[in-house]
Length: 167
Image (cartoon, rainbow, N blue to C red):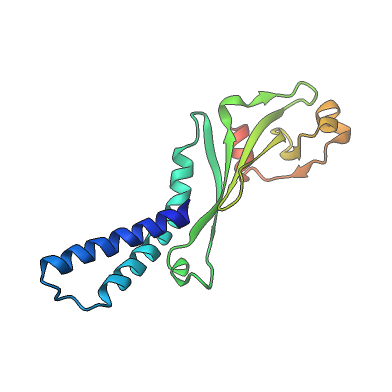
């Protein structure tokens, strides 16, 4: 859809230049129309890339908070060295955090993973607040969190710990 929108923006820019050229009595050089269309298409593509994260965050339902983002710079997009582009977002459903009775101090949280040009993903994590660690909430891990869960130690500065364990 963004490719189609880019073409529509280019055609619209060319149409504006065509009208301006007609109003001025065909005084504009012939190269202005394709340049205006091309610059508009590139500008739209850049706007679309940079506004993706903001549009995604704005579409999150109430109770789902962004806890981490990934910004990157790419050599084929030299402007990203000046202003890095956000390409991934991790959000936690903090409104639906629930306690896990099998493990003292463990909480269960749904994490939503968004990546530019990829389908969104959802994972469930167990987070221990007393002894900071997290584990993927598989069926086996939920049935026996102490034995079956693969606990990964985290620091208190970890964004998942911060979102889940702060009251």
